[in-house]
Amino acid sequence: MHVSPPAPPPSVPVRRARELGIVVGDLPTGTHNALTDVPGVRVGHTTLVRPPRVHSGVTAIVPDGVGPGNPLPAGVFAGNGYGKLLGSTQLAELGALETPVLLTSTLSAFRAADALVGWVLERPEGAAARSLNPVVGECNDGLLSDIRSRPVREEHVRAALATACGGPVAEGSVGAGTGMTALGFKAGIGTSSRRVPLSGPDVTLGVLVQANFGGTLRVSGRVVTPADVGVPATDPGSTVGAVPEAGSCMVVVATDAPLDARQLTRLARRAVYALARVGAAYGHGSGDYGLAFGTRPLGTPAGPAVLPDDRLDPLFVAVLDAVEEAVLNSLLTATTTTGPYGHTRHPLPAAPLLALLGRADPGAAGSPSGTRTP
Image (tube, rainbow, N blue to C red; front, side, top):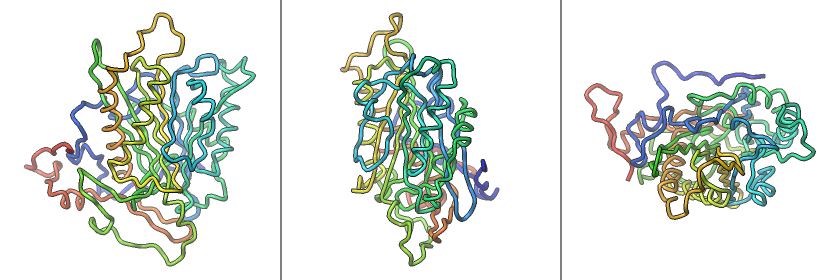
């Protein structure tokens, strides 16, 4: 089952934060304002939808050429570790990423890891492998999907890996984001990127979030509840499946800046810190993880020198801004979803949000362009 979510009605166009004039920070974005703006990074989704029982999937982040014989420098940080980030201990110990990164539903993470191992071992880069560290992150989609059915299978993982590509990245209720909720709204996958000026050519930093965390949304410093933007309270009296909405969030960061594993861990920390900007609660039941990798392979003698620590600040700004924007994109591009227990979550509606913020719609005739967030 590889099904795209239903398209929104033509009268309600889906627009990302930047298209609404909500611009986070001063740094320019890459071409697609997506993780794939980082050269050599591809993204693929498999979306599984069988309403109302199944709203789930898997997302694959595939750096070109990564493998056990060609690891990439990487770092990981757990803001709150109530989660199953498979492969994280070896990643933290060695600072080396040797497989693509998969995101999926909590109880499907283990099947996804096994499928990823099989996929890598069959490829030329895994031909000599006697050990392999698959990296799979997860969030709990049990509010809007029958999580116990573990619908993600090997063929779905392989489809996401096989279809991973560059260019624009589908967001919202797709792939690993299909059954996700955040901050009282329907959420899912979101992405953003920044071009960062350093000495020499600019570098690119991109992020992708799987948003599924609790708290109260803030946009441009303004608290935004579902009631504030006219989103109906449509949950039944049943509390079945309600607990998972307290967490979590997976944030994946990629960059072509010349950073080592320690510096990438510093980026991963700030990726988790950035969730506070949009109102994350970092609750007891939340798994808030940042994973950052560089596209420059380890041990490349001809590669550029590692960036000095005192020149990392522009990258820190970039990751904070990009994560904030990616979360907003995940909320704005999602699709209203009702799960097997009657719980319904709606995306963040654009027009009421702009009205609440006191901003004109930049898509309307004669409207001024939007201003950046403070």
